[in-house]
Image (cartoon, rainbow over all chains, first blue to last red; front, side, top):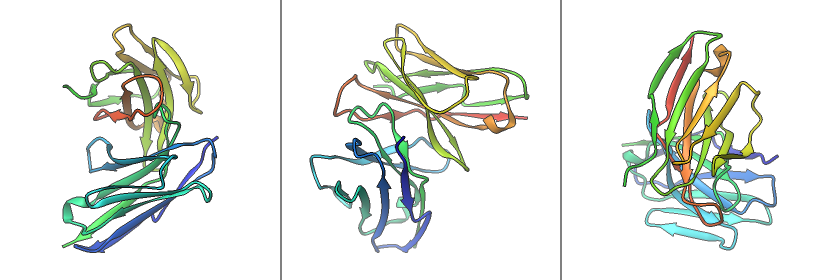
Length: 112
Length: 114
């Protein structure tokens, strides 16, 4: 089955700096790659996703890149703010999003 | 539009008991997927239901089961509870079967087995 590896497990950055989280996947059939943000005690919320027909997608301070050949994708957050502090999960699946395989999560801390 | 609703939010059960959790998807969403979240194993897929039929199943023992009703609401059941079943159980709904959809999660049910 699919396996998704996520690094780093913890990440601390100064407010205003950039944060990068990387994931690799194993199943070449995967073509949907969402990123979820989960604050303590809350539900995972989709922050951005990318499908295999594009290499990069951006939404304000958040961007995701996908390299299908290397089977890895990354989340980039620029100009980080304290409210960006949370656990971030990458995931992979088919385009239906009905069965997602998640990475182990990254605890991002933005220091004021 | 109301989001995905899970009930109850918290449960405490004793080993050996069984438990039923409920998930109401976003109106119009017909697919419901269940996940188990633990500190050690992260988020793991349990199963997915569409049109009252289980379509996909993760690698969990048969003690974990589910069903879906004609209004798309879903329940999951865990029988003969073990301490290791303590977890946050999340359900997610998607709009339709097919491509280019996204999953919306509920707040989860926190199950503690003592």
